[in-house]
Length: 261
Image 1 (tube, rainbow, N blue to C red):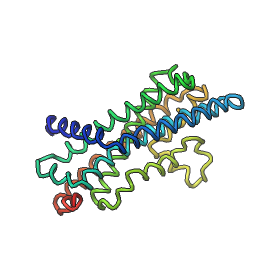
Image 2 (cartoon, rainbow, N blue to C red):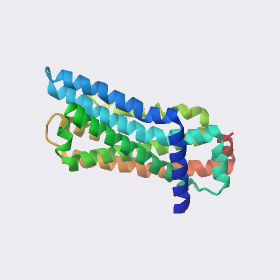
Image 3 (spheres, rainbow, N blue to C red):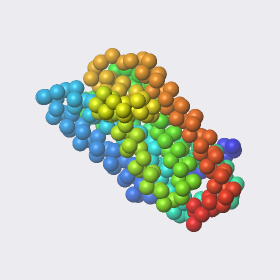
């Protein structure tokens, strides 16, 4: 993998993103307005149940951060496919590792910038101080979320490369079911008993549980904190070989060329 190619792709992504006004609006407008709405709800709920409002606000920050960290990478790949630029990149000698890592880096920059905006707004507009009181714990929770979202984006990219660009809708739909099964606003116990074992292997379950506890002023379960980070890393380690296999198989069969047609 050549670093200069990775940086060239990152620069290309930044140019495309900055010029695509709808992408800028999609990545920032919806998360920001969503957090404002739930922040206002949190302020309203303080007269009834302080913890409930805080939990909803904090979990929405995590949810929006996860969504952008996953979807932007896959949307970049779909943009390359729809515009046909993926053909030019592949004929220029870009390797599969360079292609995906550049997208991950540029998406990470965008999602971390969004996270900074959301946290700044939540602190100054809605006095959300509780997640700043334990910066180490909060950092691990957001890191786990980022790693899990990166892994999800790689797995979705592998599937799109294998199945075709008509499955591009997975870029913004797959994460929803994983979030649902990760029990964001409620404990795992609300699920039917037969479904509960599946939630333990979901990428965000442990992270969401600790985020709820943090929002409610409870104690952080350190073993659960490490579990969330470990599960995220397992997803990442599994996603990479799946992506490389899918990419190389599509290149050999010629299906990768069809992706850009």
